[in-house]
Length: 280
Image (cartoon, rainbow, N blue to C red; front, side):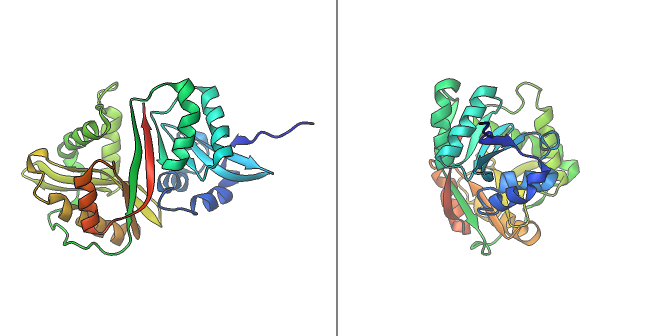
């Protein structure tokens, strides 16, 4: 008797069930939701495959498989199936990221064959805010203009290198990363306080749906840290995002970054979950 596979690559015919699964946690799933809402499920347009775990003919969990491997609603059975598919095709991602329980299960199954990662961040608090910021917004924080790409880009490179541990300019000299920064500026999702051609504070919205958006790349000039610039800066970004992008603003942060976590809490962010990242 032939049995159907417990995993398959999804396409646009599966959009309704995929959206239903993603909508169960619009904050945690905002990255995948934003990609799907933008381009659908065709792998060529998505730049990735979306795998579905199938139980009794029903899709009950997902895994985004592209530059990142991102599980969605995956329990033990789904993680085993996703890990087996990822192991058979070989590692193609630069990270595994998502809810800590799911990523932890997935990684425990992949580590024996994929080997030691470059870095593992087992607990990254997922934080969100839906009320207005508790602190006054810095009035000098604004959207970055397209003609300011050359000003913002070095700050983005510095942030990425500090946060991830490698430079985004490796390999192609930074052309893809520069294009991504330019794309965020063009979408109106890059915010900064710029004084005399110098970036004082910056942050971007990396993913957004109608329900939620996710801030990334928060950075303060190292020479100016400790002065509370992130407080007003984040309050400004939150206020702008809530007014013009989505009602819920989220981010995830390394647990050991106590200064950033304290700043976010002062603005009004609360912990709503935990992420985990495995970096290669």
